[in-house]
Length: 193
Image (cartoon, rainbow, N blue to C red):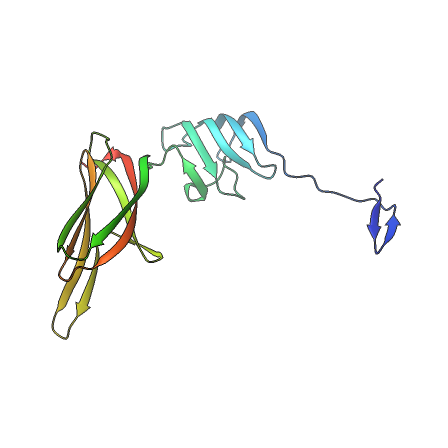
């Protein structure tokens, strides 16, 4: 029996308290809904089985039985579709090996400027780089232009190049001006070749 206070009065009514969800890890030797065998470590969030590490016949693609997968909240990892997974070892995912921010400032006088950052990976990685202008991030190339009645005139252009040793941000301007920028980069294990 629990004592609770309601409107300043102590009550001896029974109070039902729902416990916090319990995470459990267990070994499962079972079958999924298609009667395919499962032999894996399963992590449950007390509502659904969410993580599977081990074997599930064809659970990681046709003929691929071993792997790791995590379901979205509300889905059973043993029976959900690939679209209901957060991740799976069957998915070809980029592996980020380096990331960071490049801060640079244009000087307002030179029409071509190059800003290099050494990454030191020794190979030309695949990459994703976003440039921040104000409070918004943009994908490269980034440019500003004036649109006339018969033409488009590019005032500024930012491009990015990555080789086996460095990241180069190149700035081209018809009318350069001084401004500070930042770029967020992600370099991948996968090569650009």
